[in-house]
Length: 214
Image 1: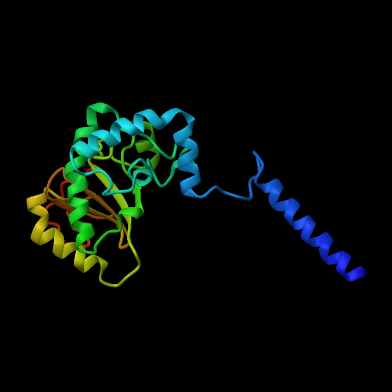
Image 2: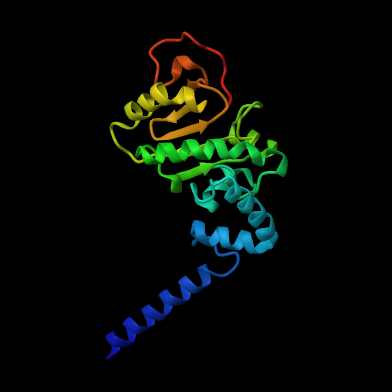
């Protein structure tokens, strides 16, 4: 009997600890992305999100990237102390449809998962904290960063697409790592860790060393 009471007490204590961790100020439990997005949406952002979604529907590109991912600001949002989500200003919203059409092509080819979008529009403060160039295409709402699945042929397949179809799509392809990339539609080019062509995983030489714009 004593053992049974002991087990019951432990279960009750565990439930209490979990409950406390879910209270405001509890640090041990982090809300999942969908919960954080829902909270942000209900904090006064629903109308502006619906206006942007209506524009994207009119351009026939809505849903190519799930809305929470399309509004992600930066991988470093926590460190930077900036919101995780943001609707781009109306002045740059028209820059996104060509990039979404490119993402649809990449997805159809099995090269990216739209659900793994990690950074899209950044305002200047977010961009600076994220380490972006002052000419970053994220500032213009033309770029999307993706995480890629870990697989040995990621680079070869992406580079083959960039070489054969990238020029027609005005595709920029940047590699942070073999499993973290940047895509935009601001010019046919590629780059890597030093933001020039010579470090791109798609090239073997430094024929074009023009600094790029993440």
